[in-house]
Amino acid sequence: MDTIGVIVARLRKIAKAISPDSFLTDRDLYSIFLKYAYLYIRRQDNLNRIMKYQTVFQVLPCVELIEVDKVEACCVGIQSGCTIRRTKDKLPKVIDGAYGPLFRNVTSIDRGTSFTFTAPSIYVEMTKSKSFKFNKNKYAWYIDGYLYFPNIDWDAVLIEALFEIDLGVQDGCRNMQQTISRVPPYLYSEIENGFKQDLAVMEQLPADPMIDKQDNTRQ
Image 1: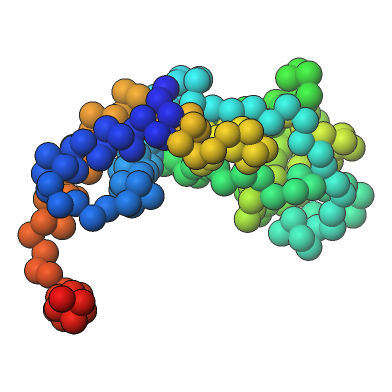
Image 2: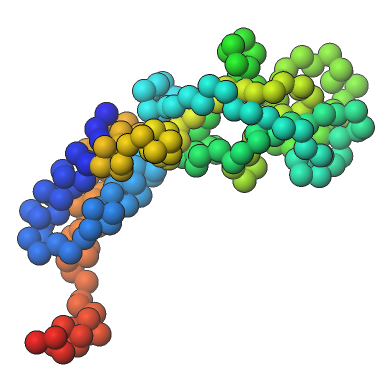
């Protein structure tokens, strides 16, 4: 996988070929790149392909959990006696796939136990079943940047996901230019085609008269 700096340099070269006077900043270029990247990642997820591309996923090996009440976890219908834990801190932004945020694995620290994703309303209905007491599966759901876990007393979990940012940047280890992009390289060609289309449209847009007026006043 390439760094953001390498990707932006390639986009800059494409932009210059289409428009020698391109006014786009590095941030603008990468923003357009990500717009198409997220579109094609969702499509790949719909085809059950993205989860097979392990190198784009990152692991948080020990995410601390805290106990919260049922109201916060959006499952007030659960009968008493249910303990709910939540990730203590909000997770880094997870890229959305075709069916929701792209979590590849959420497990116990030793990876021995995996969680099944569900919705709080579905979990509430499951608990009402007479056979639920025989259900040994572990469940989790995702709300507003947090993961919630009913009926566990663990202190931490392991999370593997397609995060929007490189975790090294979050820790302050690298600047953005040196950051490894989490976008699968096999999507670059399609993304760059979309990028070219956007630039071509921008070239056809009429100039903003207010900008022209401001430019004239500077002369």
